[in-house]
Amino acid sequence: MATRIALDGVGGQGVRVIAGVLGALLARMGKEVTVLFDYDSSVRGSMSDAFVIFDDAPILNPVVEEADIMLKLADKGHLRISGRKVVTDLGLNVPGAEQIPFASLGSERFGKELFGNMIALGRLLRLAEIEFDEPAIRESLPRRFVDENVAAIRFGYELTPEEIASLADAAPPSRFEMNDAATAPFHRETGIATGGQMAVATDPGESG
Image (spheres, rainbow, N blue to C red):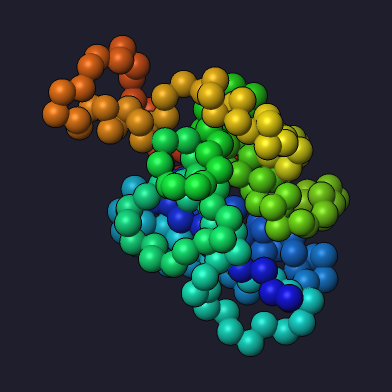
């Protein structure tokens, strides 16, 4: 049976990198795969979505109308499909979603926010019940930061529900929560500087 995955974010968060690595990995594992992108390449910070379908049988329709798994790294309100299982970065306030502080975990565990993208990929692999095949993962990754990316993917893959709940409780306010506080009519001073977009774990110039 086909598994449908949707990724929702903005330019600069690595949505296209996550989907591209996932698609390459699945193809190396002998799966039938389709990967589609929908993004505005003209403006960094604008919408960037990706859709991955994989199956043992040929895929007749590459369009994702309802996702089995949805990863939301941002919420611009442009992605109208639903997901049976939804995973978000911390602070997006999607009812019933699993929240993981990807950006702050990338910084705390691996030294840079950009590795939060690969933590997210690891969680997707676990939820989609894809085997952690390290040689195939290494072959599917860009050539930069391979060891760090593999470690971040493994970290996300091995997270338990209990660890996820604990990490979300202990995480600092996300950029979404800080933006909400800053734009509220009567927000209080937090003393926390707002961060930039979660970068891509490949090349500083990558926009997807």
